[in-house]
Amino acid sequence: MKIALKMTGCRNNRYELDRICSWAIQNKVAVVAEEEADFCIINTCTVTHAADRKSRQMVRRTKNNNQPLKTIVFGCAARMRKEVFEQIGEVDVLLPDMEAVIAFLEQELVNECDAPSHKSSKSHKLRSRALTQIQDGCDNFCTFCITVQSRGHSKNRPVNEIVEEIQAHERNGYNEVVLTGINIGAYGAIKTTDYENSALAQLLEMILEKTTITRIRLSSMGPQYFNERLYEILKNPRICRYIHLSIQSGSTSVLERMRRQYTADDVEIVIKRFKKEIPGIAITADVIVGFPGETEEEFAETMHFMECNPLAKMHVFPYSAREGTVAATMKQVSDDEKKKRAKKLQALADKQQCDFIQSQIGKTASTLWRKKIRPEFYEGLTDNYIRVCKKGDATLIRSISEEVLDETMLIF
Image (tube, rainbow, N blue to C red; front, side, top):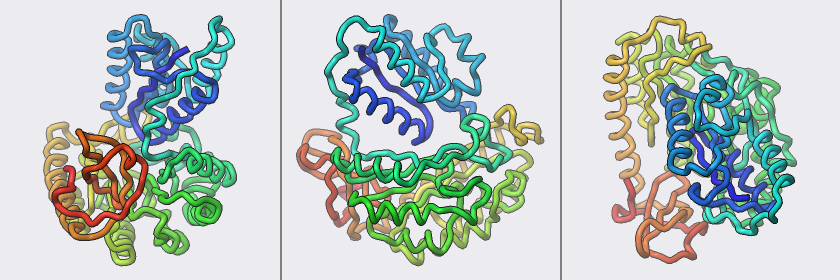
């Protein structure tokens, strides 16, 4: 049996495909390009209308380009839009989650007459960074978000299980692990709304004590989860100088309608403290424009907030109404206005990104070399998330070196 793996969406989706890939290697199932596969496994996303559409398009194109192949479709969009995917003729097998996919593949192995292939996964071998999911789900019920419906309530993985997985990544030659989850800041709390009982700092202390992996990177976090213990542990040189904040808006009144657990002032405190205490840190963020009821004055507040608190990178999203959420029932901002606001904020974001990169010229950064991008040149990622390149050979891949950044190295 041969399988191919494809996805849309977040790092959690990537982690789930990595788990399926690991299962395949352990069971001597070949992970190949889709044109060679018997099954193409597609992990879907439903965070926005665009993500829904992209998921459906991926399924159709995969099947139409490879007629004999069978598609196995799972993930958030497959769960939340089950009736839609059931009507897509290009879907052969529709499953809810990663566990169901692995169970299906195990049964296919049992049913298979021929011995399974002994090929290994080329794509798996060449990945430069490992992912470890520390929790899944969320309890926050933000008014715009469909995550609780698509991923369920928060579930924490046991500390020993996380540590053992990272130790396995080390044995497999990885030098960086990305801790991922739907709401990692709430790790250890019974509910993600209980941000005062986050045990993320304690988890990081255990990882630092029990593993020797060179770099640890955190995925997206809400600003309400940073406590004194976490601020201190994030200064450890093994933890990447990188924080991605789910800010969503720079207007406190919009944040209230979103049902976020913080104000714009709270976010500003987090940003300023990190910049003061961790030189060179890259702070990136998600920002939604055109949220229902967002006035010109509220958008101006967001623009002013971002101008006063420049970031290394901003992901700007026009609001996308999701059926089943509170915000979908609110008075909507017109599509034209959303596009206009997104364009204006994106222009600011692009300038700030260039300014941040320029500010790091001449400074030294830990750099993980990821892949070959052209003859004799390899792409790297600094701990503060700047893409660079230099001349070298294949031995660079997955290695880490200290690099003094200059303009000739930059990749925009």
